[in-house]
Structures are given as structure tokens and as C-alpha cells.
Image (cartoon, rainbow, N blue to C red; front, side, top):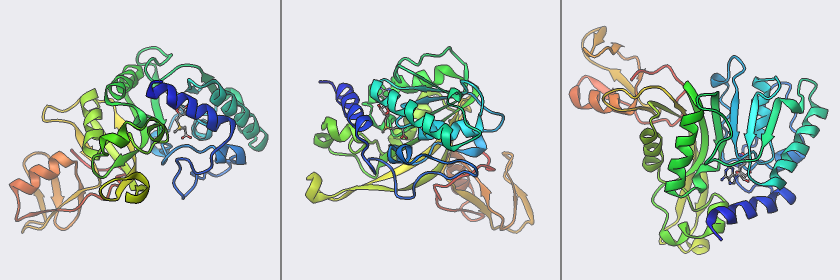
Length: 322
Ligand SMILES: C[S@@+](CC[C@H](N)C(=O)[O-])C[C@H]1O[C@@H](n2cnc3c(N)ncnc32)[C@H](O)[C@@H]1O
């Protein structure tokens, strides 16, 4: 069997018999006023973080959701786009499509505002998305792309890029590895399907997005996800996985490279009350300005005495400059 066939088989099993806590982190699902999540759907939370970023969901966007799972995030997206077919959920495993559909019917019984027709569940996979070029505002995937081997990941990201409208955004959540995962574990198809051994390092992961052409990338959250401990996984040392939530924008890449925001700020500590670095960044003395990695690097090097660069918070929420 290929690893993709093993993955499909695994998700057929957990569609038929939910496996509580398979992927999700302990803090549970994202609560929204007036949104009731059926227990069965909650049990089938197979995401590792959240892709539901309210600030990116204004004006009822059309969302293409890849890998529907039990339908939890499709329902959450429908909360922001309560209209017919606003959410197109692509899923290759028939049993998972059926489970998600049944969960959405339950959700309609518990939420007056929701109608299952808001979510259109379709067969298909991440490598051949069943929608036209530049036709959707948002693409989201939670805990799926980490399963893909590099060549497949590249193909999946190119598909996402193809279907997004200019200015559209890719909302993702995936595990990343705090150091490279040994090859032996990477080749374990079942662990890979369980989102435990396919993870890339942060640098590799972001580089895939940059190489695809996303000109602006924001890290919205990074937190511990799982521990591959020495005894259970036969690794030399315990290996921590983090869960990374991100937003990548389909905007042109600046000539000097993509802007990646991780929550760093630059603080001017020189003599002027207001100071400009000559490249369009204006600082008030002592007041932090959110900056991307590229600008943080340049400013830190050019003005080592007058500019302090703070660490990545890994919780960037906008308002910075590149
Ligand atoms: C880890 S689960 C995540 C489910 C959901 N995103 C969530 O947060 O609960 C991965 C999902 O992707 C589906 N999947 C597996 N292979 C896929 C592929 N090649 N293309 C699209 N979806 C796939 C699985 O069947 C499963 O529903």
C-alpha cells in the first residue's frame, strides 16, 4: 500500500469508530456565541489547532475546506458564511463524507441559524481540487498537509494557489517538528497518517509556502503538541512536536523576499522622539513596531545600538509592517 492508501484506510476506520483525542490539543474546539457543536462532531475533532481565524472571515467568504474530518471546522466556517454552498468541503474517504454529513444534520438540529446546505461535501483530494482557477476566497486545511511527503505537499500547495483568488488566503494548522524526525519514523505509514511522523521543521514548512508564491505569511499560534518520547518511539532523545496555526496570503512577493511575521517587534531606543529608518518605518521612541523576519534582520544589523528586536511571540495578529 502507498502511504496515501494507508492514510485513507486509517481515516475510514476513525470515521466509523471515532477516536477521541486522535489529533486535537487539549484546549478543545473554538467557542463562538450561538454555535452549538454536537458531541459526535466534537469527538471527531481530528485537527491539531484551529484554522478558523475570524479576522479573515469577514464578508461571508467562499471557503474551500480540504479534508473534512467530522465536519467541525466546516460548521465553524459556515457560522461566518451562512449561505448555500459557501463552504465546499473536499474529502476522498466515503465513510468520512457520510460521517460529516450526518454530523451536520445533527448540528442543524442544535443551531437555528444553520442549514446543512451551507456546506457542500464533495469527493476529491488535495491534489486535484474540484473548483475553477481563482474561484475561492479562502482555503483551509487542518492537520492534513503534514501527512504528505514533500513532493505531494508541493503539489497540494500549488493546487491551493491555483484555486485562490488574488488576495485570497490559506488558513492552516499542522504539527511541526522541533528538529528533523528520523527517517525510520518518517517511513512509518500509520504514524504518518496519525499526524505524528510526517511533520517538517518550522523552516522547511514556511519555505514550502514561500516557494509556492505566497508573499505574506503570518504565524497566528505555536504551542506544544505532542512528545515523541525515547522509550515509545525509539528516538535518540525526546522529540517535541509543536502545533502551528498560520495564514498565507496570495499576494505578490516583494523583490527582497516574502514577509513572514512571527510576532517580532522592533523598538527604537535612540535620541529622537520620532525616527525614520529611511525605508518607510517610522518609530516613536520606546514603542514596539511589529516587523517581519526580513525587516527584523535588516534593522537589527543596520542599527544595532538604536534598535532592539524582540523575540518571536509566535502569536502574530496583524498591524505590523514589512
Ligand atoms: C487529520 S484529519 C483532519 C480532519 C479535519 N480537518 C479536522 O480538523 O478534524 C485528515 C482528513 O483529511 C482526509 N484526507 C486524507 N487524505 C486526503 C487527501 N489526499 N486529500 C484530501 N483529504 C484527505 C482524511 O480522510 C481526514 O478527513
